[in-house]
Image (spheres, rainbow, N blue to C red):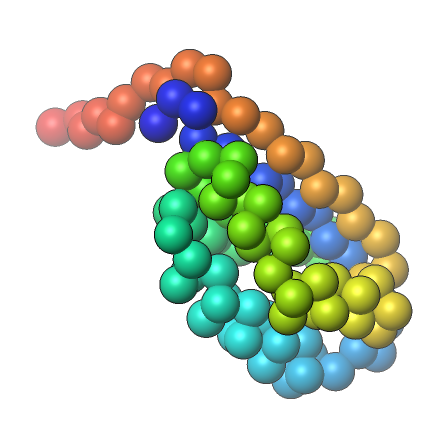
Length: 105
């Protein structure tokens, strides 16, 4: 959708983090973000080198801002930097052109 906001996050976990706690917190964050108006989807992938790539889609910048400023999300981000992530990069992009959806027979 033209005007949609896509957030691409590439994150590397610290050695020895509790994956159980990381997954628990991630589940809680998913429950929150998926209930917000304008949230479209989230998909995560893990690369062979261990980097976790997550793609969030929001209908608008306002929808992303509601997520970015949600009090529990702010606390989770602080905790992520302090406990879970060794490094990372977020890219916030706006869709300017779209091709598809399409199917091949």
